[in-house]
Length: 111
Length: 113
Image (cartoon, rainbow over all chains, first blue to last red; front, side, top):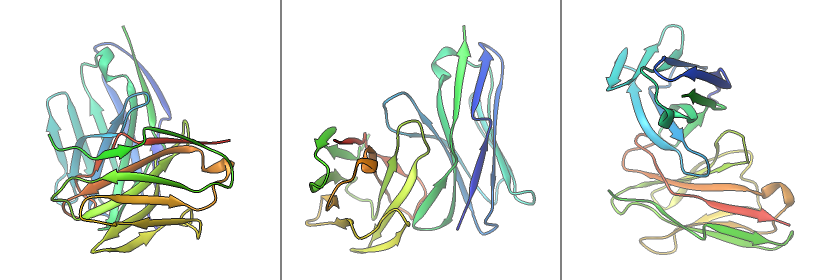
């Protein structure tokens, strides 16, 4: 089955700096890659996703890149703000019936 | 914005007891899922349900677990005889098209004592 690795496990950045989280996946058939943000005690919420026919997608301060050949994808957050502090999970879909999640990155934005 | 609703928000149960976690998926969604998250760990897939049957399940989803869609709106997860290690946050999710565009519910925190 699909195996998703996520790095780093924790990330501390100064407010205004950029944060980058990287994920790799194992199943070359995977074709959909969402990112979720989870605040303490709350549900994971989809923040951005990318499909395998696209190399990059941007939504305001958030961007995701995908390298299908290398089987890795990354989340970039620019101009970080304190409200960006949360746990971020990457995921990959290899069939219609489940997403496989990475282990999560705890992002702390220092004011 | 449509939501996935889960009840209860917190359930405390004695080891060996049965629990039923309830979910109301978004009404036009066709795919339903249960995931769990042990405190501080990753979100783990349990089971997916499509066209009134289980479409995939993980190794975690053993004979103690079952899912049901008893009517047109509810989607339930039953744990027959709970163990201490079943303590976790259980998330229901639904999607309109396969596993794209999941919407998660707010979760049920299950505590087995």
